[in-house]
Image (cartoon, rainbow, N blue to C red; front, side, top):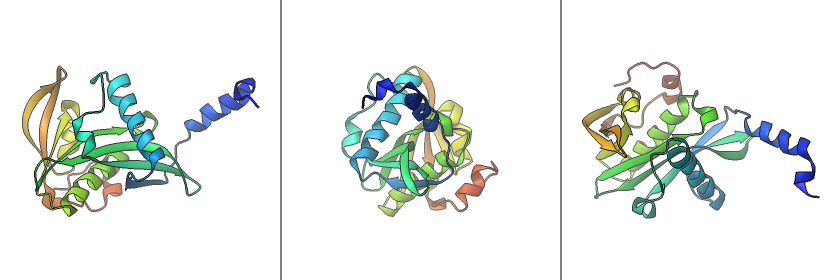
Length: 187
């Protein structure tokens, strides 16, 4: 059976891809399909959509831990809907980066917050006392609400960014899902 002979099936499949679930898990990438979709989401976000990077992968990916949000349908893994990476710079200094969420899920601010919480908390559990990230300037306030401090402004790919540092002592954040819908200060 050749799928292209069934236009209705292709159309139905495209519609189902837009199905938004609220059954989401956050985990470190462990399987090949997770890693493939992790890189696909990063490339779709930073290379194709935002056009910030010509090539998404870099030297940090070799030592990075990939953390993903996986949408589930009926308790089964469906697809990667969010991603972030963390990597050590020194024994107690870690970096986070490449935070992205599938456009269909961006209105659910809980996914980004849960990924940030998992990133900082995972690094903290591995001995991190200083956690840094380069953040697009329009997202600075979002990170500040999650117990991050601005260190200084900088430009990346000719776009305004800020270097930010997490208040590691506040992680893991409590009630991250509640915070996602309430934008109140937690620090």
